[in-house]
Image (tube, one colour):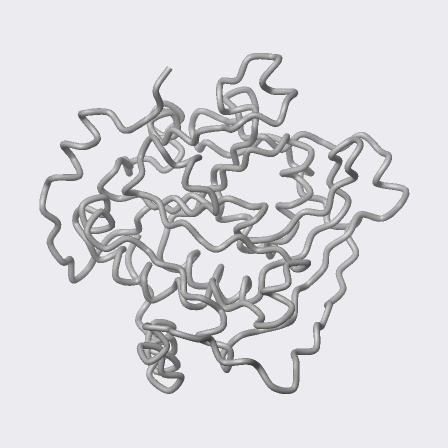
Length: 311
């Protein structure tokens, strides 16, 4: 069965977008593994036992919580998503009203167990938000939603609502040599996108392009916070945090499981990778001159000093 955008979706993407001076909070849907963190798994069982948090994650979440309604949608199983969700600050996590896992893709039993390609159909999520009144009275659609992922294939149903990030892997040679600044450079793009009346139309004309880390090496980071399970907890049966219809209250769309986010089983350390004394310049670059440290710092700081927007 072909997978791709519907005619109705493509029609919405054709509606011109106008600049909004005082936008309401759009919805941003976050992927976890490869986008915000890197999960470490036992190869035989694919059980998640630890994860590296992407550099600048905390500042990035400060920005998102202030200017967006935030949701999570991961293709991982509920027990894995529960653990990876512990990378979020407790106060941030309280404001994330929707967490979806592998349970929410509509997979049959065989596909659920296998490592098959999953498609994040935002129509399913938008319908759920309305049905369960998760963000009531707000309604979300292609005009006011952004999906962050590191795989374009997973975003095939609504391709013009997706910002595709460079996959984060602390073992990757590119990271060890140049570091990472993806989340920080993404903020100015999201800042422009959230002021659009039709985000899908604007992103179709202005797709997000990840900057090669070698082009911004002077601004990059080499520290990745590491979160691990304690040994005794790694063999225990985890609690299910999937925000499926069975675990949500119709009035608020919030989970009824009060102790789903227990941080007592988490150990956190900071891993510092020492960069080379002298980096080799990237040859034949065309965009390095577009990234000026002083100008970027000014833009970044201005975003965080704006008045808090209305919901």
